[in-house]
Amino acid sequence: MKKFLLLLLPLSLITVSLFYVKVSSSENKGRKYYEEAGQILWEIQTDEKIIALTFDDGPHRKYTAEILDVLDKYNAKATFFIVGQNAEKNPELITRMYDEGHELANHTYTHPLRTNVTNLMKEIQQTDEVIAGITGYQPTLFRP
Ligand SMILES: [Zn+2]
Image 1 (cartoon, rainbow, N blue to C red):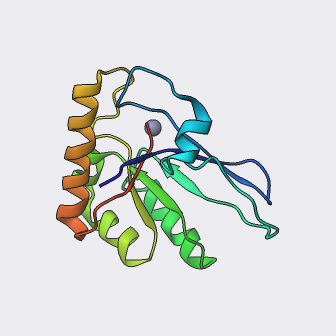
Image 2: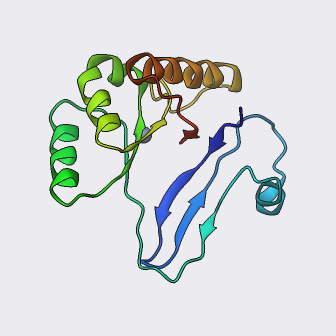
């Protein structure tokens, strides 16, 4: 299965830009290579006024619950980049995110600021397993 590495940053109401950080190779092949390979998506051109909402580092017992309440109030969906160890502490929030139709995505297990590729791949796998263990859903997005 392909693992997409990306950051979503809404640059305007019209364009949603997706950036990536590559972890599987030490050689930087550049944007063109990854776009043509279909592995990374930088931008989505659209005439619609859209925005992508993303939240990192949770779930947090208080703040994530509040975010979910606001999203529910406005019938909005978001992508949550989840830290695995926080998911283990708050499985009810992971279940709520999933049940309410939000995208569950991987943001490592311990949120290390520096690591090596071997450890990073373990962190990604570990968080995928935590999320899948709670929801049955296998994340396809990763934010470094
Ligand atoms: Zn983070």
